[in-house]
Length: 325
Image (cartoon, helix red, strand yellow):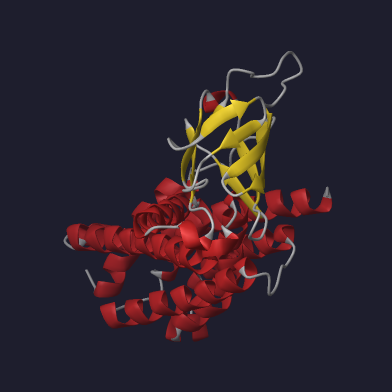
């Protein structure tokens, strides 16, 4: 089997798995809200609003503050000289979708964050003067993990990467293509996170689906096109759109204003790590399947079919969702 054929087979394996993926079905989102206002150094007025499902609120799902914090009275927490630095944990978070956390610092900008998981956990680094290296490491690892989780759970992003591999015939071309994609989405992720530009999300999601459809159409061309000759150009152009998609996921959890560069860089590194895992997995599949010569003739047709079917479905779904807004 040719090198290009092996990439096609590897891409087919990923596309076959991803084509069966379905976006999460609509469900009622029940979000709790924790509002914290620093009224004196280390002392916070607390307002906790558990969600209500129409029957009753989840009153037992209370926040637990870092160890140095103690509750002086209802609605007042004193965290001492160290301040609000550490981990806030929320019990019974399986009962709701997540916790929106609003922190108004006495000496610092307002911080909007989102905690998810079971249980939901939020790492807070306090004001710049109070953040230790250990706390900054916790923040960095947390945002890095978010980046890995986002890319590995994003079927459309992974499918685009797998689709690009239909057009690369060597390791050198693959490196150029993936590097181009990385550079592009890093630029738009940073621009969006830093509030330089904020495109509407609905058309961005639709264009991401269209980018996958384009790869499927280009793969059916009888004569080599510029996509075949320079896939890194396609990767860069549509990587800009995918970066806005990453930014939307990051906006859901929020960025700490005091440590925005660190959090943003950590999230982006996490995305890149997940992306490299994906590419490595596809490369491993190519190596394992290289001897299966009988699959080479059918691999591209099956891969393009999977690519096109999923992208058309997403295009229709996202176009309808956009029109209904």
